Length: 456
Ligand code: CLR
Image (cartoon, rainbow, N blue to C red; front, side, top):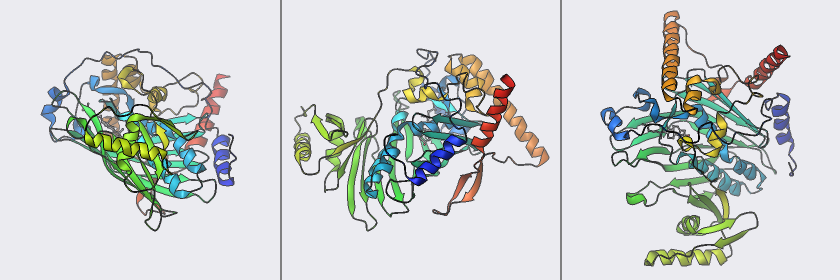
């Protein structure tokens, strides 16, 4: 776009374009489902879960009305909603400031979990899902590489960055809360304007459904995330606060970016359901940044911050924070807005506008999409159209077929081999990871051309 690309950025962009990745994506993303509102029967979560204490999600059979019309593969694609932050990170020439944008990206991934108390469809073994955004310059694909335990391997690429990792979770209903612990490491390669490619990693924090017994379930995301830049030695310790009694501390996130010698450089913080701010490090910024995300309207673009609602609270602590905020705003290192959540208009299954775009299959895309793509699953399509009974029978049929294939493999003594990823040892972290075999986009291009020719 406006900014010039570096050589390595151009090389990646050429690769994305010459393999035809954007073929079929000429239509603008979908803005609504066929349904205006989902009318799933409202059944008490506790009523159904109370007999499943100690179980993990894969061992729970739940009525389809507890599902939403997305799959776990598409939930991984939801990480792509705020990739603008990664583009911005690549444009910073201070590697520690880059980490502020990366931290905001890692936290932004949680904004979509709000009000989504529903089970995504479990992908079938070998199922794939691709999602491209020519307007944003990225391509994404994910494959279900294991069924027991469920594991998805994903890779997103764009001129300025690549993002990849393994989506695998350990889940358990312990009677009070339903906890989901992600296991895999996520990798980000950034190609900054002023230097060589950098490798950054982090692990996702715990997601947890709380308030099940009281009948007002909410999703909380909490824990410590350590984001490491293996190339420069910068690090960000990011703490997601656990929701306390009466929702105190809910959504709050705060972290400090340190350089390779451990000196703090930047603060980053706010709330993952709303806004995240950055600021040149000085001691005692947590309360300020979190408070800002609650009461200030600002824009990073023109560097101005406007305070909209000076605290009306009377408590001493509150007014102390309030005056700290006032001082900060007029001080030498004013905070700047890094990320802001997109609006969430009412939608079926409480999907975000971004999530609504995921399962669309316009005519232009049909010839290009792989036969294994989630978009072709009839059960999910039926769910999206509000045909819940049909969704349930189709889901059973597909899962029966999957079980039969598994039996067949057992009889033959063969094992399933993922089509697009290979298990390898990572050169930087030395951990096992799923390496993309590089074949998906070319194969897609060849198959797509064939089916276009057949139509002509
Ligand atoms: C969180 C971000 C991770 C990928 C991921 C995997 C599993 C998802 C989880 C995310 C969000 C919460 C989630 C979970 C599976 C089930 C759970 C959707 C997206 C829901 C809230 C559980 C609902 C309770 C049922 C019993 C109805 O990168």
